[in-house]
Image 1 (cartoon, rainbow, N blue to C red):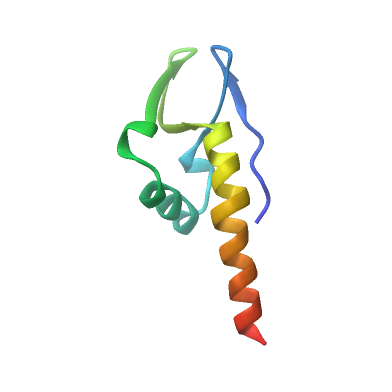
Image 2: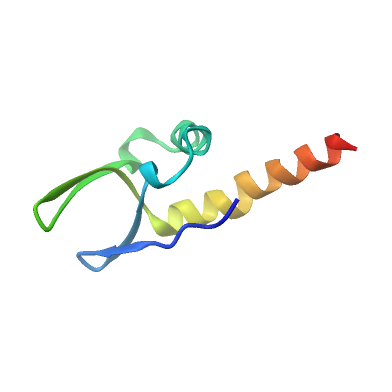
Length: 76
């Protein structure tokens, strides 16, 4: 999986869950507390389901990458 590039909105680095595949977005949603997912208005657009990039980055490094490595081990 390729790591997403964050959006800088109002001085915060965020990602939209819509940028992820459905499986990845569901995995991240289930891992996060509900209050971590926010809605952000930016330049007249309403961006739904945004999370801070640092939260996504932590999940990517610890949860998603480790689970993928485990799956690869089982493939042998």
